Length: 73
Image 1 (cartoon, rainbow, N blue to C red):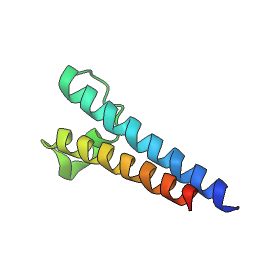
Image 2: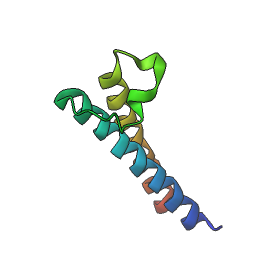
Image 3: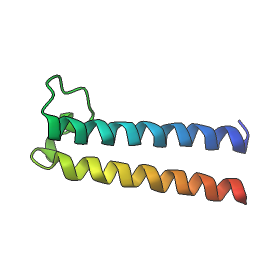
């Protein structure tokens, strides 16, 4: 795989992280049943799902910024 393909894979992983963070926040504030987000299934985050979801969103934006910086160089 060349550099652009790796950057695309990393960008997709960042997109998944962003989606999972948004799902976690939506699930916490609306109380939707089903628990189809990743954050709700991590045991040590019990009671702190909102903070975990926010941290996941922040990490996703950091991944996007890193990929963009690599593309420019």
